[in-house]
Length: 179
Ligand code: URA
Image (cartoon, rainbow, N blue to C red; front, side, top):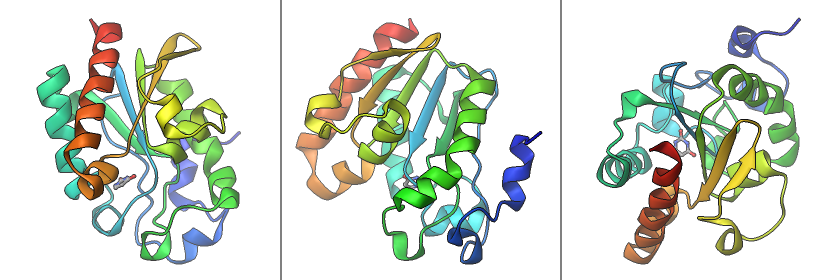
């Protein structure tokens, strides 16, 4: 039987040939909040921890300000556990190859709230094709918890305060399910 620790030696797709580290995820297994991003970037590939770059700094500031939640209270991971070269978006075959690791993590954690960050994560978790502006801030019940899609913090860094405002409102939706 496959177990999550096997992911650390994974060679299921070509990203395994260019990665430095498998970035499986970080945080307590008892976390009530699960954050799912897209894929590790350069800093994450080097250090083995997700969301340690600029996107992560913004993300955890928003979580602290809107939800009063600290990084070490959430479990943080990505759809794809190895960095795509040059930070390109992960390809559908890479997402499919990595799927089992994310499914095992979600099964093990059973969070109250899952925040999907951006379209790649939202599509991977909910299996939907709609654009992000239809999906964000609309909670979807899944298993024993709820999924709240929001934008990826990199979008807020690129596009500025309007996206950050929307993310803050989406986090307020998530807050209702955490309290
Ligand atoms: N860092 C991550 O770990 N994931 C992302 O989606 C972006 C940056």
